[in-house]
Length: 356
Image (cartoon, rainbow, N blue to C red; front, side, top):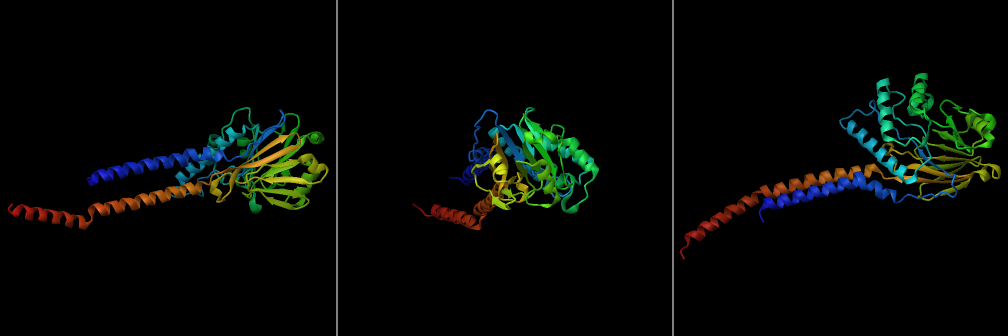
């Protein structure tokens, strides 16, 4: 077979395999990953389904200044959008809670940069109008980590951009409180009727594990049944005052009776949601999913594929293609092929010279 036909066949096969690899890495992997998630069926008609998204940290323009920074932002945004859309279809939530660090550079962004980040965030996390949302600021959104100064400008523009649709009460039984650990503050708009509601605290940084005056104020004034937090990029469950910490990295569904925990066991429960972004360098990436049936809480993590694994596959495939191309060119242009052709021509001449 002529060498050009072999080369053409190899090229077409390689292009087909590359197309299949891209199709799997960019589309199919999210559908296959979804099959591993645990469903939580409502026991009553008035159950409440909640998605909990922590630390997406959309990449900014200041810290990411490399040749590939534009591609990195695009890939990170696409990953967040693809995983969110799968979680949205799977859970069909009534409420979505964003647990801070929505942006990576919100606290240092210029007004123009901040507006571009907001537009990207809205493009990624598109929802129907009937889905309720709550946004909690993180230290990367407004500042405050390690005693960093929090400007009024950062607070105002975050609230103007994200909290227009925020809810505090849902139906007749749920009440949400936004707890800001950086500012040692929390919302409590209707203190006199708190006892009539199932009370849910939302914080960026953990509350029960930190102690201090904020914890005492939260317990005394809010007396929450459950707190959801992020910030550490880990998946953990805290019980206070027992100081019990549970690392939660399996695919199971955890069940809690919030009324018994508070009234009989006198414990406060906090669930830390892992980061939803692969850019945080964590192996375990996920979105929290909780279902409330009256005082019964069932919680799991919708674990997400580690994007870095598939990016490394691309790098390996590219290196493999380069190596195969070099090997093939060496085989087609190697000196021994020229010597072989020369010997064949000499043999042909000798054969022609010998009389029959």
